[in-house]
Length: 135
Image 1 (cartoon, rainbow, N blue to C red):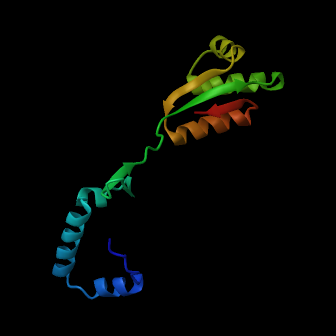
Image 2 (image 1 turned 90 degrees about the vertical axis):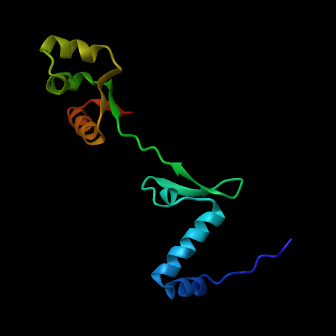
Image 3 (image 1 turned 135 degrees about the horizontal axis):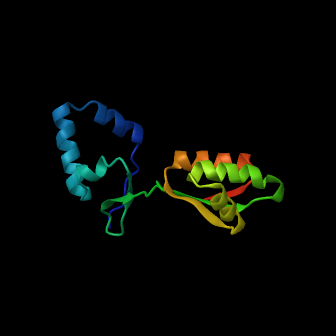
């Protein structure tokens, strides 16, 4: 088994910088073939290159949560009226529905909404005195 040589990364960078565009194209093609990766994987905007057990490179997708639920956890008795007003405006419900809504907690206020909308709704409810969870 051959012993790996230590490579000076600065020397490698300087050598690559001195290549022509055609030489860089040939170099990247050979590098992709050698490592078993494709340009699609190299330039994926949502992936990270990771080394697999077979020493090939593969892209590991990162899932970022895009939909959120707002859960109303608790409403202090001193804030009930204010929270009912906020619930009415958020859910477009009547007074009776909003009042019944806050009596059976925890309860989902909104489901599958964007992060921006979820943060806005959460802020409104917290300002009115409610305890809210974002999921």
